[in-house]
Length: 330
Image 1 (cartoon, rainbow, N blue to C red):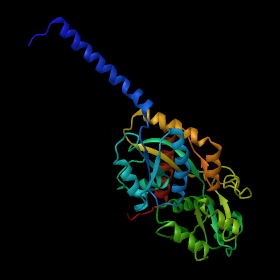
Image 2 (cartoon, rainbow, N blue to C red):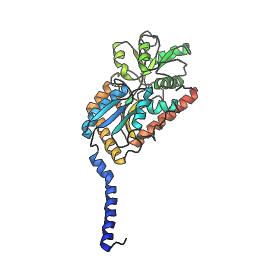
Image 3 (cartoon, helix red, strand yellow):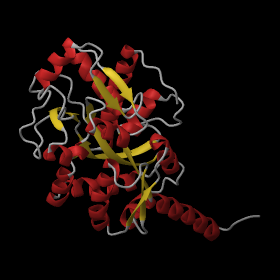
Image 4 (tube, rainbow, N blue to C red):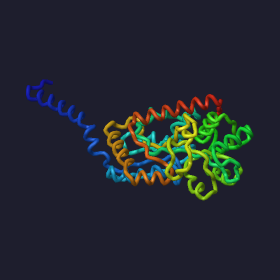
């Protein structure tokens, strides 16, 4: 079939217009996004530290992005179920995943078959909350500060017990990192989760636990005593509690975190829009104050900075696991 000059010109113009339209799609997507509610998968049950951080940020993020954000708790299997569900969603910006230093640091270190890469399987956004740990003990424990704790442990090598949420959990690795820096040997008592571990420390059946500041009311009421925190600076809710850094434990300031990500392959325009909104929310006084109320400080930053944090944390804990010759059954 032959085409005259007018037909040829019309077809060429059609191709040009189509190409231009394709070039404009990312910009148009950024202008229109979000055009429907966004789901935030939290891979932990309601009421925990991750859930608290997610809901605090989701409430203000919805206002910032002018849409609804639906928190979807998908707990189970140490965070695996929720993360995998999020990664199976379309990478279109309408399924956020709340990840943290358990799902994207501890799991990759302790479970080679976890099924996802802590960085490349995600389109990272930013950490939303930094979560320092606090070393707590029951009132009956003979030490009331870190110096006394270390002295007691040195006099009783391998006998002072500490709880964790299971082999390879963040409390396990955090405590062993501290023990190595302090030159002490402790007795590891692993539990299947945080609730029972905390109950047994409260009851005095186990002598110590590195955990988040979800135990703040237990500390204030005297049901637990706080010995030290790995926060980079003193925490406002317990201003008299010293940090490990100020006591000379350099290298013990790698705190836990909660963050947000999309599945890998999410368009850059969506990442920029969502990332800007998240950083704006984290600068709001209301969000800062509410996070402080549950023992956290705001995160923020770029996807590249977030990736750097995750890679550094994974390398640190993988080295620790290797040095301790930790074996895991997953």
